[in-house]
Amino acid sequence: MAKLPLADWHPGLSVDCVIFGFHNGALKVLLLQMQGMDKWALPGGFVRKAEDVDEAAVRVLEERTGLKEIFLEQYRLFGQAGRSTTEHARVLHQNGWLDEEDLAWFQQRFVSAGYYALVEYSKVSAPRADYFSSACEWWPLERLPDLMLDHSSLLDAALAALRLHLNHKPVGLSLLPEQFTMPELQQLYEAILGKSLDRRNFQRRMLGYGILCRTGERRRGGAHKAPWLYEFEEEAYEQALQSGLGSTW
Image 1 (cartoon, rainbow, N blue to C red):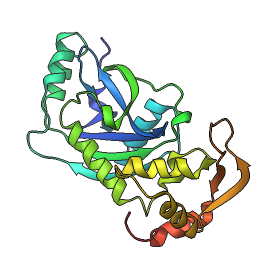
Image 2: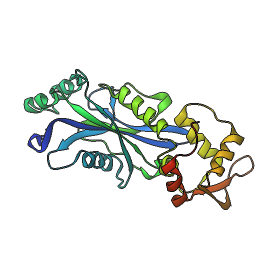
Image 3: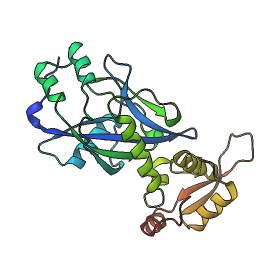
């Protein structure tokens, strides 16, 4: 049993991170399976006394994904009374992962800063579990496992924030590879919005923003006509996001 550095952490304060990725036309989230439990959890952690809350979230993301410079947005503070149930802590204690002092730490009330992060799926080659977890895996939004505590509510709120920010944050640039097709971009928007979009209207709107550059190459290997590959014009994209990409979808 590793002794937890309780003296280094700020009491009652934590971060929880909803890490979004996009793969095979589906929006996915990175989840941890708790030791000795069937339930899963969002990646998160405690805040060190010597670090900013944002720095704690960045640290958690790097520890789970191995990546730095990830798009990160704090979207809400979760501080409802009674949100910090301690079933998971009791299980960890019973299975020898926590001693009595550690258990008492976990049983205090916690306020959590909720963040969502956007990562390119292919760059997270080997997600890393933490000390309290036996696995760290991607799960599609349409097929999520049972989540512990209030993490379902945290995830729902993160998705709502992502939809709200779709026209104001670099969502496509952060979730897609450097080169992508128009159908792949549309699939991303549909996965985030949870609804189908008209193909012609979508393409007309996206090209009308002036943020895409057609590379002159096509995606090879499909059964149908190979679609054109595009890239984001990053400077134009950033400028367009400042005023927003038009109306809602």
